[in-house]
Length: 141
Image 1 (spheres, rainbow, N blue to C red):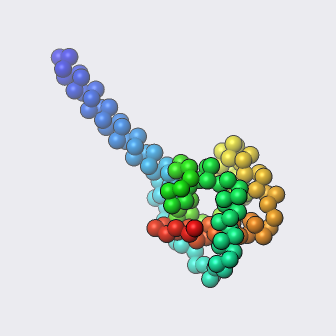
Image 2 (cartoon, rainbow, N blue to C red):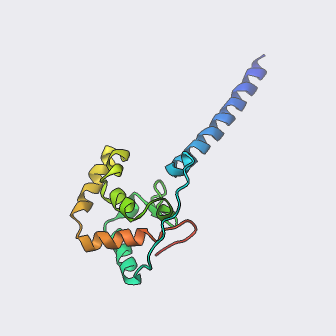
Image 3 (spheres, helix red, strand yellow):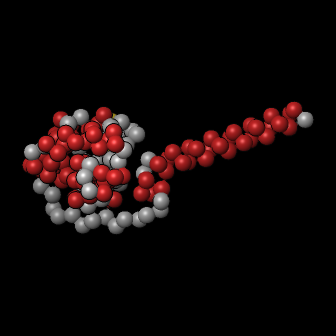
């Protein structure tokens, strides 16, 4: 009898571990978790100098403390493929925690992003342009 309970608990634990791993993997990309397919916005030809300036803003602001790009930075919140999900205004909203992003983000994330509202407009625009280059399977660095 005891051996049967041990076996049941072991199987149940294994199933639980698999389900939790799957759930956490889906939480890494909430858009995919709910099954939404968002068409990639068409992008104008992006200025290479502006893209590089945007990457410098990302580095200078320490965005890698919370985000990762191409496996570099905090893997909890990867930005790879973000341009496939959001247009320029959406990227701006998420970077500044404004618009719909303000209610979707945690209060802590909103507080952390408040300082980005003080960025010069040119820096913010460059950051958004750089984020527009982050597509699935591509790395813009």
